[in-house]
Amino acid sequence: MERWSIEVAKEYFKFSAAHFLIFPDGSSERLHGHNYRVRVAIEARLGPHGLVLDFKQVKPVVRGLVDELDEHWLLPGEHPRLKIRQLPEGVTEVDYLGLSYRAPTGDVIVLPINNTSSENLSAWVGRELSRRLTERFPDVLIRRLQVAVEETSGQWGVYTYEREE
Image (tube, rainbow, N blue to C red; front, side):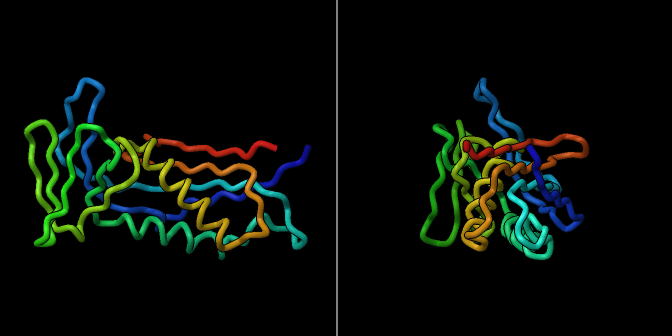
């Protein structure tokens, strides 16, 4: 069997964001930030013009995703003990086991994940990228999509989606 894919890992596929992890024992990290980097691999059938997808068409979609996350505080909206409230004065209040935080609502992104690990961030980026690519390129059937999010140099959380055939 023959297979084709493209991979993109541009310098500008990066975002800076604040977060804190919540560990299995219930403890949490201090609020801190990272300069995350993203790389993407897409496998699909080779099209009639010899392309999986044109790099020039894929790069803006990835860049748009990372730009949306850039310079925000990322929160796990599905963590069972983290309480997030948007207050009427445009402030988001976050409580976790007696720790309280407040930030302007525009600076906060609540993601549908249970923790802000690089693994979960790669899954969110991968699922959202898949959705956007499918909308934008309905004729391309993605067989495999892999997204890696680097939290610090040499440490990647990786999400892989493979279509069953």
